[in-house]
Length: 105
Image (tube, rainbow, N blue to C red):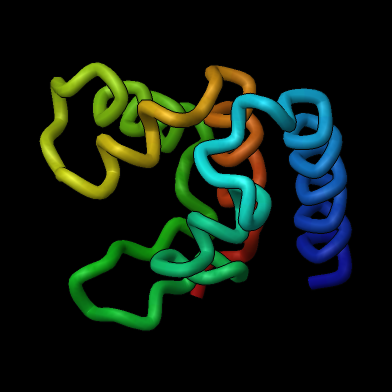
């Protein structure tokens, strides 16, 4: 359990550094990319809505590939396409690492 938390915090630090480095690339100036994702998927990767998938503990490569599919339009979902199109590849990679490092429920 402690190791999982340490991994999650480490991923959050990496994500924060990535977001800071790519500050101009953020979709909206109101907050970080993780905060935007957390609005639906939860900061802990556990969605509060039954229509939204949990991301905590998912395979990192899977998460990255799905976001890239949303970004390219190969996978359709209006909101996810909008979000993914406004993220850099680095931000998507950092998000995938962040959610993959969280403990699943």
